[in-house]
Amino acid sequence: MKIPALAVSCLLSAAAWAAGPKYVFLFIGDGFSVPQRMVAEEFSRAIGRGELAVNHLKCHATTRTCSATSLITDSAAAATAIACGCKTGNGKVGVDAEGGKACSVAEVAHMNGRKVGIVSDCYITHATPAGFYAHRENRGALYQIGLDLIASGFEYFAGGGFGGKSNDVKDPEYRGNLYDLVAQAGYQVATNRTMFAALKPGAGKAFFAACDGHMPHAIDRPASMPTLAEMTTKGIELLDGPGGFFMMVEGGTLDFSGHANDAATNLREVLALDDAVRVAKEFQDRHREDTLIVTTGDHETGGMAMGFAGTGYAMHVKRLACQKRSRTGFKEVVKATRAAARKEGREFTFEDSKPLLKECFGFDFSTASGRSGLDDKIAGGKYAANTETDDDRIALTSGDVEALKAAFARNKLHDAARRIISEKAGVGWSSGAHTALPVLTTSQGPGAEILSGFIDNADIGMKLKSLYY
Ligand SMILES: [Zn+2]
Image (tube, rainbow, N blue to C red; front, side, top):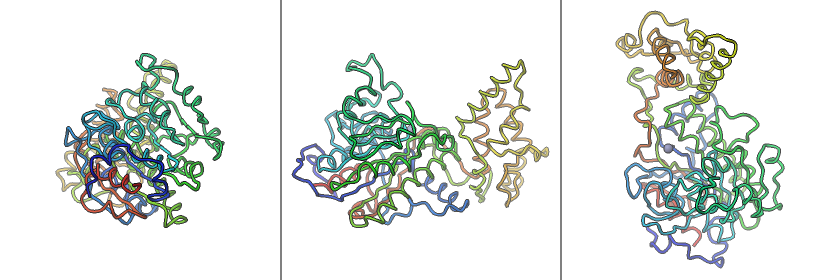
């Protein structure tokens, strides 16, 4: 179904109250296509967590992601398509290809009397959340996007804070620190878990910043920071009422693990997003007639593949459980250990890094037998030295150890480690950037059937908005 261009604009009055589902959850994984869904699905089953809620909603739609300017979209153009139903150029948020304002489904829902929540584990002025409340030709205009956030009047924001250059005093529109401005606009501002827990309905709009910038990856995230699922639960608590709500929840740091080709970190992000979808499904079970859940991705990131030439037909996704820190988290561990050694007047050697690699990646150096990785590859696709049943450790070949040593010398141990564990799990990567692979949109609840078959990402915004007309 194609909605006329006029419907993309903001021409809607509050008289349209009560049209559309009372409750809408929209989950967006940044860099979340079929491979990310399925690696996490297989991992979740392998560790006994069961199937992913995000994959098992009733309606499915294969979804094209191209922007107005490229077959490969960025998150700004994709967010604009998903939120506003409008194709635009890469880098633009909430405006069409010519720069004209495009109205988002969140704004339409708000005008229909719904309370609105925007949740992301990236900073809250980042491209995906911005697509729902901001209208700027440059996704990098973070301060101006922050002003749009405040002007939106949406009832709940949670996740990362005003990070990056969100508080750039040199911005031509600068009129004060955004944290001050959001408080002056009547928001309860919370900046730690205790304050987050104290946010209560009936006390006005709420703004929660778990940290100033992007939240850490789920695999590294300290218990002091709420999860996406907890921020979704809080959103329900704050937004529920007679008028209903619209809530967008983004798994945004997922994209960074795709860019880093960091498979274990990537699937842990998917599980964190899935935990939030489970919260929505539990809510839907209690409000079956009134609740629509939609999940999608804005694009694929990394060219993730289920299969790696070196492991032939075998995949060992469970081995990814051996990884306990992200690539970036491990980089910090190495940096801190190196600095501590320097302080004690010692040199930090490759031998010193072995316990760290064992702890953070499950690497077993005792198996490096003299066979190189290449020898293993030639010998029938058995690239990994692990036996077929051994998923509790990552058995290294001498070739792996040589690669780690060389990476250590270049201060790139984190890159070698994430590559080795990806390969031994059978996960391949073809890019460090976004790709044009379609994403999967899944949905369930009243109106879900409008997102079925082969669709375009702009259909999501257009069709969701049409529910409110
Ligand atoms: Zn990206």
